[in-house]
Image (cartoon, rainbow, N blue to C red; front, side):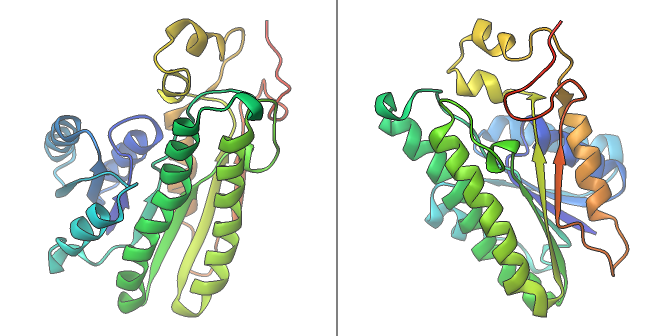
Length: 250
């Protein structure tokens, strides 16, 4: 079994790769940070005695994506799982004060990056006659919140793409699943607040958020249902969070 995981150098992608490796999947892991990718690969091979293929590229660049996917050796093309995990939030400004570079970064990563990967991997899955695509969404793709504007818009796009992919790929025996977390304590907030550690920590103050491992377990569960079962859509949040804007803090 082979799982292809984007954004595998940190957070949910890294935790998911670890869990798939533990369960004897060989892995194609991708990321922008080459050194991290290689270090993680060494760890996975040593810890779980699996094979790992590293692809170093930026999902925002279609030429890089296409070149990397085209470089996959024939013996690695029996891809069972594609986890479209690479994504981010940048800034938290009102629409009238939004930073254009932040908007571009989110749209290019969360929407176009997911599309670029899917466009290059689905023909391989169609040729194989099987596959399962798992798209990382967010509670922000189900409901909007103040100053979430463009990030929410990108995750609403992921929600729509997930539904349309399921229709397009149904004749090809390819499952499609969306995982939509609430608060997860990863590098997410550090990236959103551009390295402001105080603001990042404040996001989870007074409650116990989800951890990357919680989401990895959910991904793996969805990926290992029987062939006749597809989990269309999961919303998962911390027990202390009711929706995108309501949380119990102590």
